[in-house]
Image (cartoon, rainbow, N blue to C red):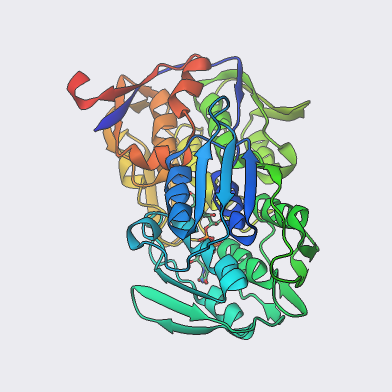
Length: 425
Ligand code: EPU
């Protein structure tokens, strides 16, 4: 199994470009189920979750392949024979597999699938997806491992979400695309990736108002009226944050090209509060990191609040900042599993319920650690940049699910990072 080996590095410099967002592209790929013909996505990241989603769509009747000349372009060919039973092994490998629910109900009126997989942050229920779809006329047959859903007619409904869930908002709006009449989703998720999906659907012929706001209004259109389009995936704010965090802990300055400052406002503010210098520049975000960062308190919230996916990076920055910071997790109570791994590098972190209390150390020390999930894995690589000696990260298949050449991009900024086969170690 491959590992990532990191040596203490810095100062970093130069430019790094950010690919399209995992949490957008996977859902945009699923939208190909609506219309026979050739769909195209550009700015597609080279990550293993795209391959998994491609295989899942293949089983549902959409052939997916990367362009021969430009691997950031994805061609999706829906031959008009969409199937409604998803293979369990693919569904349980990624969370976004649940996103086939809305489109398959909209197009075929039925679907059968296993419960979705994804990172293990504790329980990840889908009750809001189900309650909203029931309100639209869907009947469910559910057990602990799988669900079968059926709707002879989908009808528009007024749905108020208890919490602005990304996945529930997406499944409800994608089902509503072909429902009879108007669907209103109140307290909808406002993440840029949700807006990206709405924009693609509108380009295909759907009628959606309130894009990017917490109230979405979807006027159902006839089945068969959507058309294939070409669409560029929104840039990945979490990958962008990862390169900013690399400079923050290793020192130096860089421009993260393609980063959308307007999608990362709270993060940029907090990092500036830590004594870093971040600003929007034409085509990206620049960062200058001089001297030691100062600790701040942060809490994760739905967008536009500080994303839970930034949190392992923030904990890593606080682990080497001056002073003590408290990190409060409001989305996934179980999302502190990597703290044990950071502690192996000498980080001083105590967890108490959904809080982590991080006391900054002057330096960390290299050790062997295991990536428990995508974002925590990347944060361990970033922590290695600030650790004396060598840090070896295993479990990097998690990182490959969501990061497009993390190692190559860090190397381009001057970091000492490499992939190694265990035989090389
Ligand atoms: N929730 C419920 N019931 C539901 C749906 C959600 O209780 O029916 C809870 C969840 O358990 C969680 C909270 O609501 O506590 C937020 O969940 P949400 O539905 O918003 O998350 P998701 O759609 O499952 C996506 C991303 C995650 C990201 C979250 C939050 C994808 C494939 N995944 O998950 O990304 O952390 O939104 O922003 O889009 C990652 O990329 O590493 C990742 C985990």
